[in-house]
Length: 443
Image (tube, rainbow, N blue to C red; front, side, top):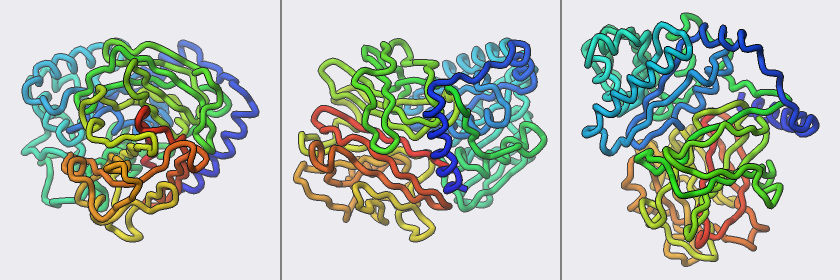
C-alpha cells in the first residue's frame, strides 16, 4: 500500500505541475453547511510533550471521508505544568466546544485524548454532568484506565503494546499489541476503529485522498516545545522546494508573515502534491528550517516545534560551519532493535538506527543527529545521554557535512516497518547559522 501511495503521488505531482495552480471549485455555501451538519465536531487532546501533530494524519483521514476540516480541532496545553493549569484547560475546552457547536449546528462533539491527555479528559468529563452531556463519544488512546466510562459518555479505549489487562470497564476496549504508544494515535488500524465508533460504520477509505488538480490550504502554529506557547517576534517564510533536492525553487518566499500571539498562521494556499520549506527567521538567531513531505490535502494541524535561541534542547547541540544538525520527527516510534520487523533510517547512506539509540522500549519519535564535539567523526555506539534521557527522544553523533560538501544536500532515506520507502533530500545548511527539522510521514 505504501509503495502504491508513493507511485500515485509521483503521478499526481506530474499532473499538478502540468495543470499549474488550477483551483478546485468550491462547493456552494449550502452544500458546505449541509456537510458540517452531517458530522459532529472532533476535538483531540494530546499527551505529554505533545501537540496537534500527533493527530495530523487522522485529521486528514477524517477529511478524506467527508469531514469538513474546520470542525476538527486540537486542544493544546503546557503539558509539563498540567497539574497547575487544569482549570484553564477546562475553561478553554468549554469555550472551544461552545464555539464548535454554534458554528456546526451539531448537538454534541466527539472527543479523543492520548496518554496524559486521557487524565485531562477523564477528569474533565467527570467534573460535571453538563460537560459530559455535550460529548457524544470519547476515545481513550493508550492512556488511563477507569472503572467506568468517564462521565457516562460512550467510550472507546484503544490500547497498544504493554499490559493486556488494561481496560476501561464498560467501554469498548480494543487491543493493538503490535503498536507503540504514539502509533496507536496515528495508525490506520486505530483510525478504522475510531471512525466506526463515531459513525457506526466502516470508513470509505483509510487512505489520505489527495486533492487533485488544485490548491490545498494549510494552517497551523509555530510553538515553543514542549509548552506549546506561541512563537512571537519572528517572521515565517514559506518556499516551494524541489521534490528531489529540497532546494528552494525561488530566492524570494511565496509567503512571508509575522508570527505573533499564539504563533498561528494560515490558511495558506499550497499545491497538494508539492514539497515546501517553512522557515522561522529571527534577528540575531539561527534560522529554523522545517521540511515536509507533500501535504496531499488541506491541513489545519501543521506544527512548527522550535525553542527560544539558546534555550531548550537546541542549546545542547554542538554547532559549526562544517556540519549540519538535523532533527527528524515521525508520529510513529522508531524501532532500531527489531531487525526486519523494525525501521531503517539512512543519513547520507549510513544506517543510523540501532539497539543502543532507538530500542523499541524507548518509544522514540524525535531524533537529534549532529556532530557531537564537532570532531567530524560519527560514533553510533551509544546515544547522546542528554537527549536519550528525554521522553520520546534520542540523540546520535553523526557527522553530516555542511555546504559545499555532498553537492549541498543531505539524503534521508526511510524504510518503514510494515512497508513503505521514503527518500527525502534537504539542503545541508551550516549548523552555526541554521537549524533543520525534517518531518517524516507516519503512514
